[in-house]
Length: 300
Image 1 (cartoon, rainbow, N blue to C red):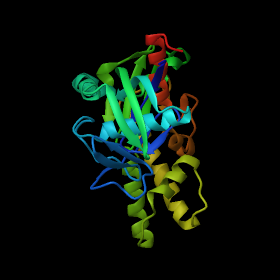
Image 2 (tube, rainbow, N blue to C red; image 1 turned 180 degrees about the vertical axis):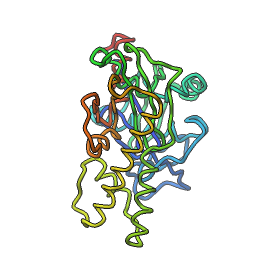
Image 3 (cartoon, rainbow, N blue to C red; image 1 turned 45 degrees about the vertical axis):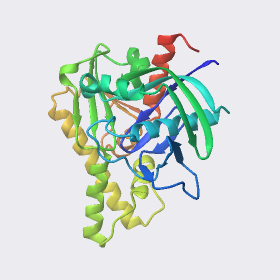
Image 4 (spheres, rainbow, N blue to C red; image 1 turned 90 degrees about the vertical axis):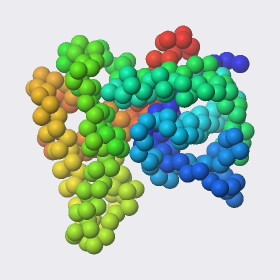
């Protein structure tokens, strides 16, 4: 059986493969559900995935949620190439600030059982993990582009719960200056809904706010839209002020915003700056893991 390279990027908001996006919620079910859409059956237990965010966890290894999301993503990726069994070299990620403390635990967690036999949406899958590699989120997503950056760059990965900041000097991570700020998109949504409650007495579903984040616009009620847009302009301004407070020279440093959250910068940065690069591919980290794996294992 030929090897398959696969990257899985698990965030609190969404889990991504190369072509797969699943909301990161996991709910253990008491029994087999009547409809098996987005359902994983593993070791006699049933889990529904998607439809919500992942609960805040101290680490990705404290329960079965990470494994269930990984299996669902693997199944979705295999489904796209018409396979139900595969030998896989798997790439996963952690924030750079947590690599030292959590990398080995993550490896041990994923390799408890190299053979994964499970059902996804009622169909059986058999996966053998040839290897698991853990990479730094953000850095993995841009590693193939490092030669396009200047001497000084800062990679900014805007996630659901945190914003991870990775300074690069001549393409190498500056570990002493890495930061993780607790101001991910969840905080923006909370502030926007607070403004909506004060103005209209009601909130907006997160799906509407996400649509505006991604597209800058929406067909929703124009009064609601204006409040959401104003909140996102304020959120982006807060992000830029936090970056400036970390003493990055905004004239000489290239700011590289990556992932799905980068679309917020693209749409709501009031003053576009020449030294800002937007890489708003939501799958960028998963693709980056795969690119590194292909180089490491010489697999096409």
